[in-house]
Amino acid sequence: MRFQLSSNMVRIRRICILCLLLTNFLFWSCSNKDKQPDPVAKVIRTMSDTLPKISLPEDADPQSEDWKGIDLSPKKPILPLYPEEEAKKLHLPPGYGIAPVLTEPQIDQPGAIAFDGNGRMYVLELRSYMLTADSDGTLEPVSRISRWEDKDNDGIYETGTAFVDHLVFPRFVLPYGKDCILTMESDADEVYKYTDTNGDGIADKKELFTNHYGRSGNVEHQQAFMHWGMDNWLYSTVNAFRVRETPNGVVRKKLVITMPNGVLHTITMARFGFRAGQVECLPILSFRYIMEILK
Image 1 (tube, rainbow, N blue to C red):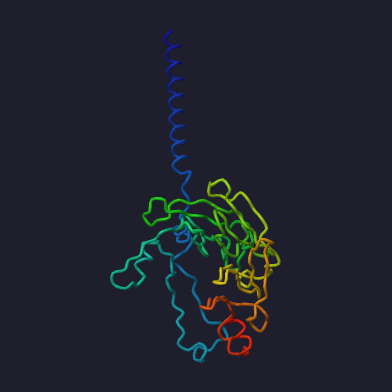
Image 2: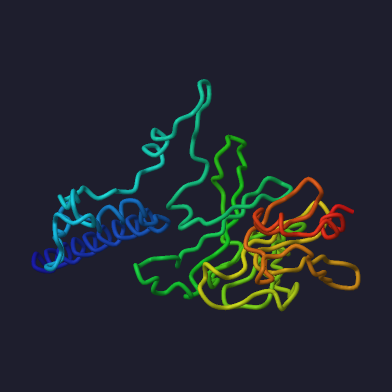
């Protein structure tokens, strides 16, 4: 009888220990479930205070004009800063202050932002851009467009969702009506309209908006942005045309002002409601073309 009681106590003790370990594991899992790695800390950990020593090429003449006075002494690496540290580096006029409204790790590799009519912020997160010196993996489908809201009106965008995920280096984000955006991917030719139809902050409907809009090649040389002009047309860089949605579909119209190679390299808004290429190209235009634009 004594042996049977002792055996039961041992069994109960083992069960208690197992339950305690399981509880601790579940608590740890829940507390770390929503935690994301801090990008700033991650970058700092990968950098070292010991930099490689640089020396002149063997055939270099230290007294030549090319090399004389060169400083090859080791330098400390320039480390990324946390938002509160970066704010101290900004010089503001007296009476002004600055505070972060949305930072990493909530977002990653932000490239552009846009606001809709309700003040919600759409963030273009280019998560594959220049991760290595050779830009490996730039066209991997890991980028996204997130949407953020300030629901408690404290100026901080604390509530966010991945509005459109798994994108290939998206070129732009343009809010376009209720719970809807326009965007396109790199090495693509189509602009798509993404809509959140059930109000959960995630686009669940994808529709073709227009095509023949893009080109492939270096991601820095492809078309970018889609902006509203004061004339109610949509403009982008590179493309020498503008587009607009009508009851009969999306129409386009060729632009008068382009660069010598027939494309727009920059977008600048003039008070007359048109967009043109770089200012340097304007003087070569004839008076007839300028008057046509100003009509």
